[in-house]
Length: 298
Image 1 (cartoon, rainbow, N blue to C red):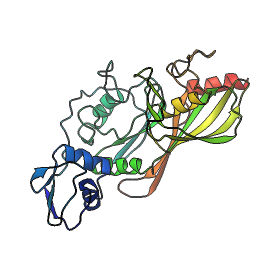
Image 2: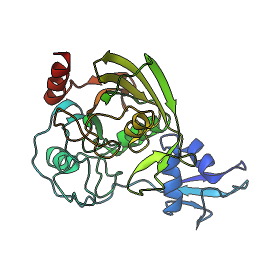
Image 3: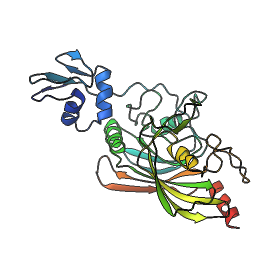
Image 4: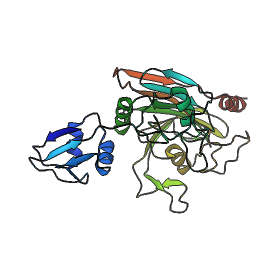
């Protein structure tokens, strides 16, 4: 438990964020709501206005007990050290347990590989999981092996310092060589299981450029500034170029018999949580993706 004697008037979450620079604003807000940050011994809201002379007590973050069974599964490990694990996830693998997917997830496999060497901040079903990609999106994902790495990486993601590059095959011939889609995304008002462009949603920014045009399809490089749920899929479908195979945001029909969106997280760039040096990782396109492109080329 760390204590601070406050000499400024401001929102509680902002004050703590200045004092505890290793914690993201989001983490601070969660800790306040969970009673892990007290003012004069009492629980307050993140918006509480501090007063000169207030005593703020910050509890050390402790890893939560992980209630997840390790499962031996093949993993394509791109990189590993004492702080991070970079995995090239296969299409069809869910990142962490949820409705309809109690096990057989990436989290189960990571538990088996890393055992006790994982951050507990992600909670009982997300040990070490800093971010996620959809079940049918393949490619790179970062796993934090300790709490300090997890906090640092979460902070980088929140500040949009983690650069993510995807490759997508879409239906239709995109006219622009490159463009930016800036449309807010929220829950669909018609189907609560889906996301949609929604004026009351959260800011979502997607950049894309054309890598290759085919007769009825286009290969795109996509970069995202924000990380909204299904962001790339929703944005591309909204402008009339749904991702091939996407069974949620298009009719899913394609002559290649591909199920699930042809979307691959190909590159990741961020600062290593310990060395602070910029690191870059790449994952080649999956075999099935390459085969589809070869058919289009032919």
